[in-house]
Image 1 (cartoon, rainbow, N blue to C red):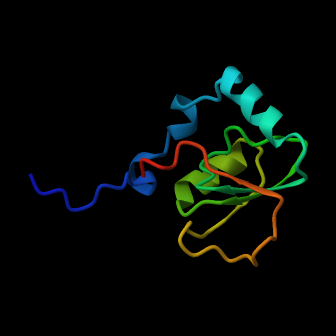
Image 2 (image 1 turned 135 degrees about the horizontal axis):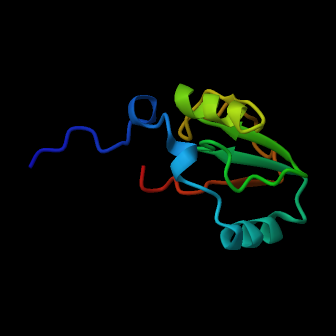
Length: 105
């Protein structure tokens, strides 16, 4: 088998993503506890915004136009169109970074 592109195409298949993948309250509790002491958060591969604390300054990075639109529909902050391998920020611009359900992509 020859797999040419192993990345999931969210722009083509992700239109109902936020309706299928819901925030798990048990995971959210853990994430929020770990982020509690930080004020500025960079969420890389932010998707539709699951697990982003509402009481923090979050900057989201998401390369999919479809996922960025779902963020807006879910009342999340707009995401910057960028990819993890080329982030448009200075070093030390955030207190902490997060990436949820992104490694397999």
